[in-house]
Length: 309
Image 1 (cartoon, rainbow, N blue to C red):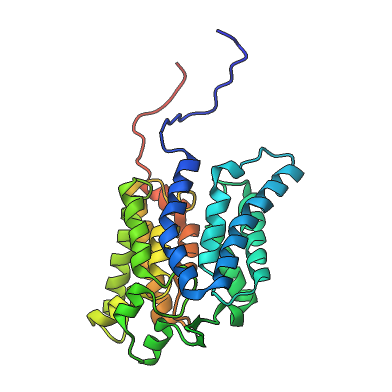
Image 2: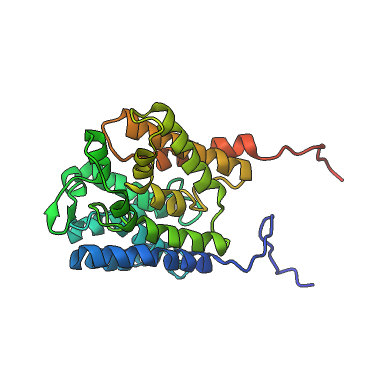
């Protein structure tokens, strides 16, 4: 046998589900929400989607060329980051805001930490939070049917009634990709059936969120209120498409449940006790930071003692 063969460190895992295949499935699953958002909000939303989807891979390619690193844009992870970022933007956002978000997501959050697999938080979510901090007014400027208005979650906080059916279909103000619950659920079902995501994280997320809202919100166990909280904001988008990110979520089954519970409880805390009516992005990012601790306490213990043979 040739002595020039070099074997990478174990463990060695073989799977038909490559990174590019996984990312392709995620892109397909996001198409219903993307198409509906473009249909609902018009040209500027289409421009933002195209701009972010094109800019993120370009930035990654240029960075890797300048730093003389292997080019990895073929894994489609940058495309997914761009698409998720666009879906988290308000339809009225200017084009340059999308560019700034792409630069922050790819350079600051992803590449400076070593690229795909090394980032400790979701790049698209981190970029969204960065944009909210820097451009709060623009990131909370929502328009529906040509009229600027408050989101359903803001109306709920003020005690204004909301239409659950409109929220489920998507006839409400919001970001490009979060408004249509039915479109997001269609994509989520596809990902679960295809085996791309583990149902434990979104299920633990939603169950813990519902329990928290029932126990601590002023409306208590009001079914209409809780349903509106689930359909409103980025909860479904976050639970199924961003909290399930392979890189920033635990690898153990128990850890995934704990992670989902953390996301759900934190989202509930933000919505009930903070001045923000949303909270999904911050909840997932904080939970991302807890992943090393969660994995440390949930990785099965090894029995026996190693030694020299």
